[in-house]
Length: 441
Image 1 (tube, rainbow, N blue to C red):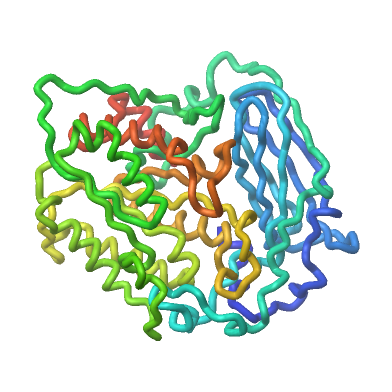
Image 2 (tube, rainbow, N blue to C red):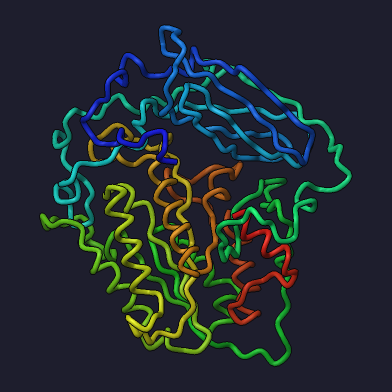
């Protein structure tokens, strides 16, 4: 994700040939190649970026955002080939006519620009709400939000499947190319169809209460307002009514959210030890010492708004060291931890998108932070659920720039219920499919 913009993310520094006059334009850029395959096969579209005066670009750094809507709603993966061309890759399982919606959010790596070193200090205690004029140059025109081809509809037709079996079933049971594995409970790959989330790797979330089941343990949902919404939603579900003895919520921005005090100033830099101490405080609480307890842990978009990427990497690494039970740290908490990824953000519908304090609130930075944390938690052996693609492609959109209707995550709640009935263990009994799923993720 960072490769096309290596050495080009420092705020206020402009590389040679990367000036404003060389920004890409969604109006003049062109689709130069399409390979639309039948349902069940990967399709491709290639975009050639051009400047506003119709010059062909030979450098990368553009942030193209692509979604497809038709018989299903799908998000596309965009690969920057660093030569002015962008490969849009997507998998459609349901045939039919689809509208391809393309936006150019940023050019010249502006979507990944980092805040200055003193950015957190200039904000409030949570590193937010920096005053106008504290960022030079003034951030008022980097966010382009340009529709491709002036917003004219771009449609494709996906034919009926021609393969006799799904591509997923043709892969080897133990792929030799799998260099990294991950304990994904949910890898996030799939699409929305008829208001329902359908993973590409079909699995059942059906569960029944085992005979003689006894409620045990505490469910803790720890994170920002999106996680807090999940914590509220599960109160009416079997998770809190039947399966766990109790459910608790911990609402954070950077540090714990204290109503009425969240905007206070302190002139201090980011203190990762406070974040880690509060996570451990919950894990070591009497409620979480119950056998069978589970913490669904997430650090949300506030980190992407307030921190540079290097600081976030160091924080996640230190957090993992503090949470992972080893001979060195001698931890005593008994709860299981699941890492829940950050949801997507809808920067395009935020009213204050060009104000100073929200300059680094970009979908690109949020996705980058989420990807790094997911990879790090996976490699450390923690179970992970990835809700980023699920929220990114939901056809009903978001309630605002960061929040979603709780129904978007109902399948996640059902998955957690099944997870609990299996004693907080992975769901798949089919071992080869689980191995495959971990490799793909």
